[in-house]
Length: 77
Image 1: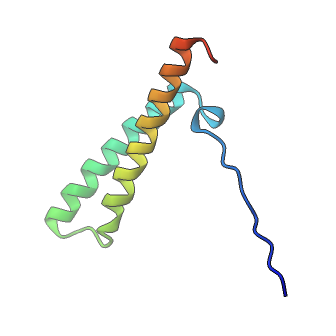
Image 2: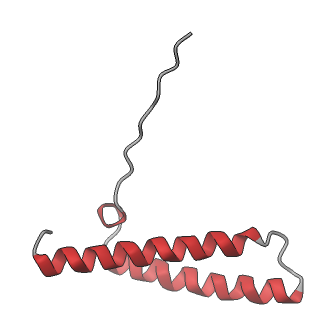
């Protein structure tokens, strides 16, 4: 039986959220990362992978913000 590959095109973050929403989400993620790091040091964090997930989420948000800034400076938006 042949299988179909489903190619899912993801939307860019700036298509889903505005720049202000991205910055608010970035602030919340950074706060959550700080809390997770503190909880990990105290031994309260049950899943230490949450720190890695948060760091990657922050990196994605920073990339989306930077891409939006570049697009607006070029006038591509």
